[in-house]
Image 1: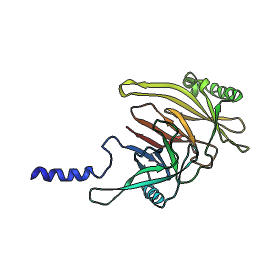
Image 2: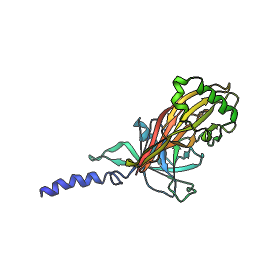
Image 3: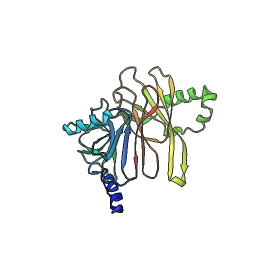
Image 4: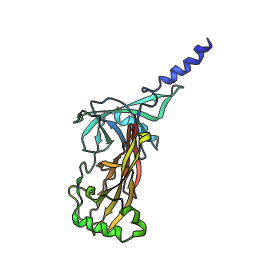
Length: 261
């Protein structure tokens, strides 16, 4: 009888979540209306969390009303489902919702994710190309002009991999983002490998500003601010999924992540 009393609350707790502990994929965003999810036909739920818990309820209501969500990497439209979980006392858990999307299937046999928004992006695709030779010369001169600040950095940069990112039809005065690969970091003990990348912004007058470093390789560029600076979806090689979202507007900083095994 004592054993039965001990097991009952454990069984109730284990049924509150649909995934085995340690296996669920989690999306976390400091920005409302943005979440990561797997592309169809993958139907695995992603546990979506936000810094502002009100955004969890906003996402649930949006999906339950049948409104569309948009994959920011291409602007494609999807439908979403958001499951509300129960806490052990039986109340709605307002901290997290389990999200899946339905719509265009992925174009690969491999599992793929996307960053989704409740609103369509103003810039669904970005013009990404090898850095212009003149811009490369300007950027190298900028770095060499401040050896105290950039002395160590200049020895890490791999210029052949430098890329510029712009809006496809840039308006006069639009800025250009430049991303340059840096050093590779490995830790075999935890199955980790990633190449740091350094981010610069070039003004329309040709002046460069160093924004900082992201921990991995930018896999895609997304419109999260509706301006000429892209958000960077960055991937690190790890035992599972190690994806982060970085914002340039207002200074380079991490504003989201997607991970799990």
